[in-house]
Length: 473
Image 1 (cartoon, rainbow, N blue to C red):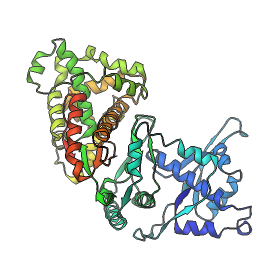
Image 2 (image 1 turned 30 degrees about the vertical axis):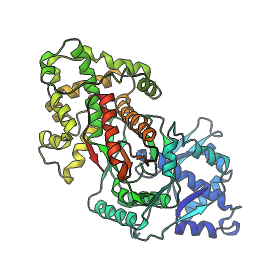
Image 3 (image 1 turned 60 degrees about the horizontal axis):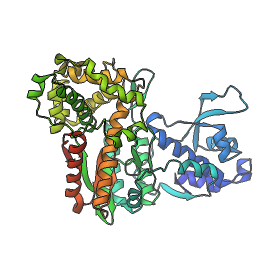
Image 4 (image 1 turned 90 degrees about the vertical axis):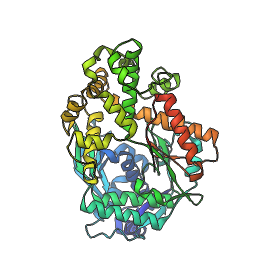
């Protein structure tokens, strides 16, 4: 097994002996513990803005019985930090005990353009590490994508140059991230050094063929070295010496929300309700409702409670003619890909420029991922402009017992469409076409680009009844 470490950390471990550490030191044990901290952080980085991850004694003992000696030594020499203020004890203190650990972040005078700073270190795995890693590699019928991932390469020079550009931009204007608070998602400034290191680690891992691929248990989304890489660095990726090109769905999550609203309104149209609205609405409807599509329902039930799924059809009890104000405008903007610029102008009174883009995307993050009564981040102004849209989203959230139902539903729609429909059909009809995804984006090589677009459009029409705007990326 391999782990990517900074050169100074690797040197400290290779120089360590039983004599200078004060306990029977074994290099492999130390590397296993570091590998575990890195792996757990990579899987939980969206919930760990300060870099600390919780590790329990029971699990650490399965990696090394002497883990306390190794952690204490690594804390003394500056390899790891232990946050002793965060402690979670089992009621029986002899059974389990957890602390928070992180790899020491770089110094303020660290020079990120030093390309020799990271090295790959090999060590012998043990059962605990092997079980942890392999359990994250369920690909559920996407083995053909694993094949292409193993052939991926990266232009090291270009990748590091692009990473350096992003780092310089972040220092001037730090980006904003979110972590889940008690009542809503809390914003925080992303540390430019840590973000740079994370991207650089991924670049090095791809260059060293240290790949991973897994589908999460929440919505079926696919995670890999590609999804974890900044889109700004994609021009450096190569497959058989060719660059990757592809398409992504313009304003993806709002479009999927629009498709869901369209389906719910279609039920009302079939009942003869809202004739005035539908006489003005040029948007087509799915040939078959995706909420009654047996394949999609089977997929959805593996991630969401069945009771919550059935609650969606009850929305008709809450719909009325006045509630549809703004729905048609919202749907048309989603289809043309002009939603974000219009939201910037109509809701915030600004132009959709680089300095304002984050503000617009944060609004939809808040709208989709937080409680229905939340009026932060421009939601009250969105509600005034598009009351019908806000009403339907709020009712879907309130009818479900699961607070995460609505965002997970949208993510399930996305992963089902991209992975189960587009990628599997593309592989079936064009088995020699390389395929990579980044959530709402699909990548291949230039000779298959037109074929990819055709499949994305036809599958969208069949599943949603509407075709989103596809941006070349």
